[in-house]
Length: 123
View 1: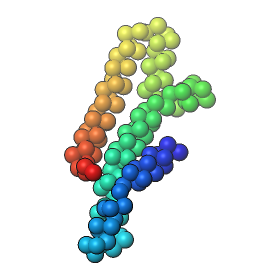
View 2 (view 1 turned 90 degrees about the vertical axis):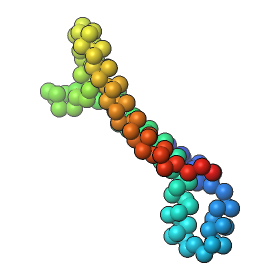
View 3 (view 1 turned 60 degrees about the vertical axis):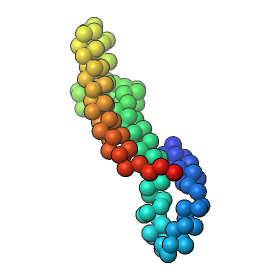
View 4 (view 1 turned 30 degrees about the vertical axis):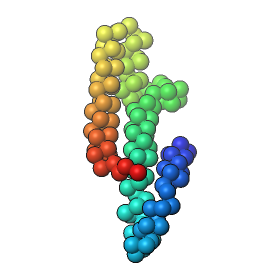
């Protein structure tokens, strides 16, 4: 799906000159892959990982449409608990839950983005 499209765009952005230079330097196909392709596709990898993490935390709509968090609380996620609290009129509790969800996403995304970007290669 979307991840494949992002990777294809990342691969298309790599200039053939890099591979030609690596070939002239005597690099094998495997070395070209690990030392040219992988570092230059890293921005696409950052994008795919970030979107996947956000998508995983945004799974409320499917769970709510199919099970409404049940039976019992077996398929509850944080977003469905927040929604149930809002429906019950606990606005302060649901707002606090949203703040916790935001902080959870920030605690996952910010270090991940920092870790990927510290090794990013400029073209």
